[in-house]
Length: 267
Image (cartoon, rainbow, N blue to C red):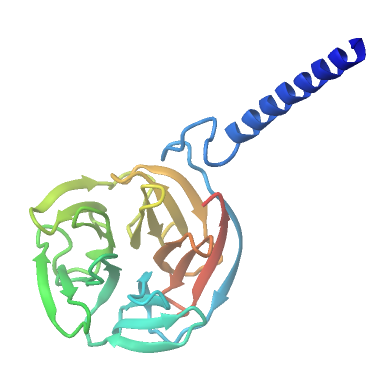
């Protein structure tokens, strides 16, 4: 009987320890981190990179293509191109206008793009992308210069984030329903320019490409820089797209026409 009682006690001890171990393991899983993930403590780690060649001329902006089969690329010289994941390039909406940034509404698939100098924001209506609507002209910054609208990204709640390159470096919040709802002058900060923008809805942060500093920058929604990553291997990185599916960030080079795949952990 004593042996039986001791055996039961031993089994009970083992079960208690196992339960404690299981609870501890569950607590340490990525789904339940010890410290809640916020833009301030989110620090992805940059790894190696590879590159793909395209025939897009002076690519200056990136977003996911409507069918998810590659990118839409804003071309300084040719409007908007479609580029596959391997670099095959075809025209998407081409013309002789200085297109510097492009983005897409993930629900409607409407495409938005900006024209520098004229300071115009346009919408291409899905699904055939033949109807081109003028959404807004932003005349009080960059108008008539080569320092104007350079980046655009879909944010949320029918809102766009738009970047004026420099003189001044300005981040504009634009509601499709209410018009401009916010503006942040980033001149004098660590960013020398806004070359492109990409909002990351997974982490609720904004990425800003700065081709003058040759960096890509993790920022809060109002443009506060949380971390900078050198991309000195890229001559003129003017387009950026955050890709969680491939665990990387893509950056296009306005000089060479190449698109760089930069791998990240904890993205």
